[in-house]
Length: 327
Image 1: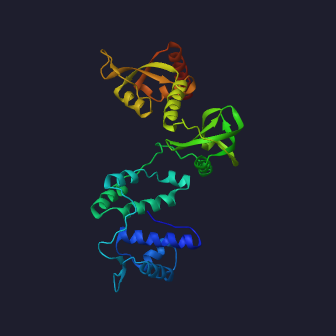
Image 2: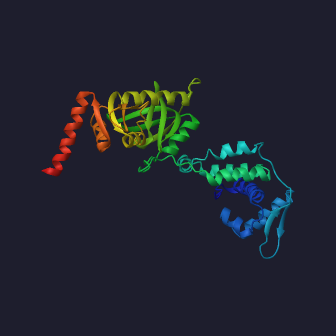
Image 3: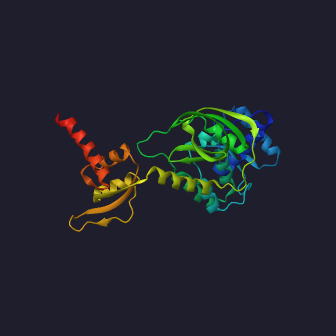
């Protein structure tokens, strides 16, 4: 992960000196040009920085000639944390890629990873590097583009600093204006959500926010609020309300696999004795057109057995499809 340090004045200089030290400790020998490219500064600046590290007592040496560069004295190590290898691995697994970029934390994450690596001994560092090089989290679902959510960083900043927000929000009922107290930010299946207090905690999809203003007003965060407990409860309630229709299906083994891939995950499918390779399952579905189309997407791998009214709706929709091809 390439590090870019973007501060100003003495703060920028101090941060760069620390980063050079950590890079040399983590990567070993580095040329002045490599360091200059890393921090987007001149070779002269890097030479001055190395001199300052030496004046400060850091045992950094220059190796001359072809393949030379700067390195630290063998055995020198600055320990910035007390992490062991397992703790370092778990921290590196927390990387969320583009999600950190959405939150404006990608540069900070790069610096954190570098500090973690620098804090470890050789064998432990090697184990942690294996994780960082071989694990990638991609929270986006298949065949879906990432929703555009341009206000994620502003919402996150308000959450961190307990600042109230004035938002214009496009809900299924229409556009509404709200002043909310932001409690938490959640990433689910590639989509960002805001959990905010408006008398009671509510959930807003950030991609549906049309405009936003961070107010000067602060608020007192409820001490008993637990975002994990709230989110799990809200999801369970939302899915129960959304998928309020129980549908009895006969499905083939292929249809059963397709149902799982669609996210329905039917529990305890029962084999149908006189229909080899077919199962009887009950699935919770939405009421309306989407459920009809979900069933029809299974093709000849599924048959609705109840409720009777829903079966008739599926048959009627299937006849409309046939009419398109035979008329």
